[in-house]
Amino acid sequence: MKLYQPAVTIDGGLEYELAVDAKLDYLVWFHFAEIDSTVKKAGERVFDVLVNEKNVSRVNIYNEVGSFAVYSLNYTEKNLSSSVLNVKLVPLVGTPLISGLENYAMVPADFSTVPEQVIAMRALKDSLRVPDRMGWNGDPCAPTDWDAWGGVTYHANKNGAGLVITQIDLGSQGLKGYISDQISLLSNLINLRLNNNLLEGRVPEELYSVGVRGGTIDLSGNKGLCGVPPLPDCPLFWENGHLSKGGKIAIGVSCFLFVSVVLLVVYIFCIWRGKNDYDFGLPSDLMSLAAKRNRYQRQKSLMLLEMESHHAKGLPSLPLDPH
Image (tube, rainbow, N blue to C red; front, side):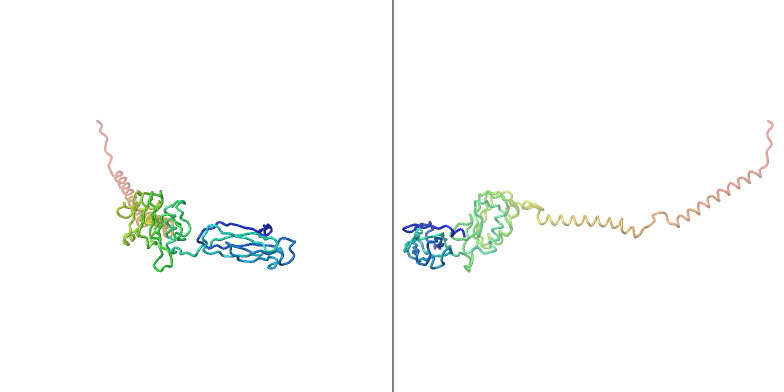
């Protein structure tokens, strides 16, 4: 490994001062490797490791792992009272040698926010479009010694097994989204301040439970909010910048009815009529009656002509008047 290829050594010993946070425990990790080919046996390089003037180990690298091999040592310094951690390598035989030195703060285990409230807060983060400067990342409440999410107040739940949200104060933050229905999961919320923003859309009815718990809600200064008194009614088919559930249902029903009518018309004119191909001409009985009548009219006409002809032949000739 490249970490162990170089090393630091100096006559008279080595000393390091590491910046740390007071009142925390620190794990100090030492990395050694005997990369000097002149060291041929154990005992040719021996030194003590001191942390804050306490001798924590005597190191003989060759004796532990031989040459050109990795040897690691770690030590935990507890209850620091200073912001500096002092490390010394004091020579006993030869000069001290070190390849790497690391220190890690040991943050104690802490409570975390109960899972359903984490879901609610992340949904609110997205719907309210909370800006990055508010620090809404990670666990909303943990670690408890940090103000992780700006404007959020919390405390331990009744059984002491997790953290719950009790207050959200995001007034006058320029928010431009809407209030997510997932806010109903914040069952311990007693104060909500979202005043003087640019929020819009329907306000979840579940927010009434905050008042039931004796809390306060301030949504003033958001002209686009609607749905609960004293706010105005919301549009029937539009909410939170998109179609409401009722609007989607209405469009779905309308499309269904339209398609049904089209299919019915196609069935009547194309399928049902094909199976029952009626001749829409005159019925045969009516046609026969008309034909008989026509024949009667022709026979009558012929008889009249014949009678006129016979009558004409039987009349006497009248003399012409000489006058």
